[in-house]
Length: 550
Image (cartoon, rainbow, N blue to C red):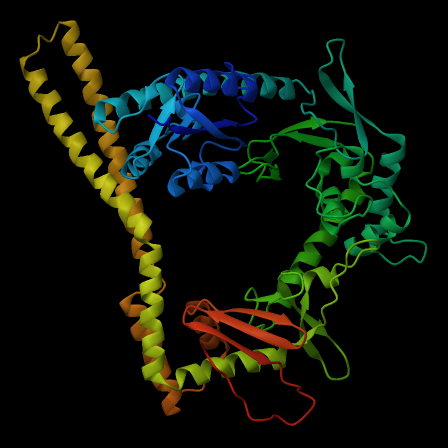
């Protein structure tokens, strides 16, 4: 008999790498022993450093393991514990484990864990799996809560917590190696002060500098960046030694440089690797040595506020393709750009081209006149709408494709419905057993626990069903949407309306239009097809316009 092919899957997150033997090597050692005992042939091993809140099929390595099961390259997937697949539900959250088990069972695949063996699809086994996952989750939550309480108490006592010091500082540690406060670094501290001076008061010319100009100046001076000095400080999207605008903005925004460091200001959302600044509602202030004075800090924030307001004001220009146009050279989003010449002109420019830094790979794409590409795109849409019969056919084809893409959601909904029916049957059995059990006996107590767990599961499944139904209903091309688009097409064809900016924008979004520009040519992709063309020259008389949607 041919041995079943197995893939091993391990997962850790920053919260549990050192807890209860959850480190990657220990998970793989245990899984290899289990596979050997079961007579499985190991064909692949995958590992993720990812949140358990993200479904396994959406994690980078989990997606590969799931694909091997779907393609038939593997028959079994093995994990150390249940919660390596899916995090147990918290505070009424849904739990996707039954969906995962049932979905793979339909493909003839098996899910195994070292702790429980093969997971079956019956309600009792799934309930036991849920209890196991909840127990593991509760243990880790307890550990995290104790750790968080200790850290908050330390912060309230005026001590700094954290593994990385902000750029411009170094940690001061106690005899046990624990961080207690910050001390200004002589070299990088001067850089921080220089950044604020340039931003607020200006350089030697006395003109305040913007974040981009500061980044360019520091790069030219070969000043070490935060990422260069502190490995892992940031994801490196730039060449080493090249300062980015965001690095400057992060420094300007950080109040620690004015003498107040906050514990809990930066938060990490589920499924994300990096920490981002939160609203600060629960942050605890801690006094640290100041690199700049409070007045400089205040003026820097005032200028930041003014710049944001100006940016918002500039965004009010009617860029029809904002968020819908990309550079064909480097696949970077293009943004609207206003040039106040004698005759003011608006352009779309590649973000990689505008954010030009020395020693970096530079996108060679050219700016595109907004009035040219916008006219080309909208004229293409008008041509498409001028043939209502053909448009209707394309919309129906797109609608069918959308329905096909939603089939996995429909399957999940059906599985959820089956689980609800099974849980209802189990609840009825427990109810009948309770009526005949002695209220003072151990069996009665055990049945009551089963009753609570079953009822909780029913509530959870009902929420899951509602969520899936909502997603299935959130279609871009339902019958109502198609009717609205067709009515618009008829209006355009009959010359009844002259579409204004808001109307044009609405239908570009409704049709899912994405425009790619490369070498003076454009490619339009939408829910109803694709077309190509050459960007018109607005300095010359317009020529006959031709488009071929396919």
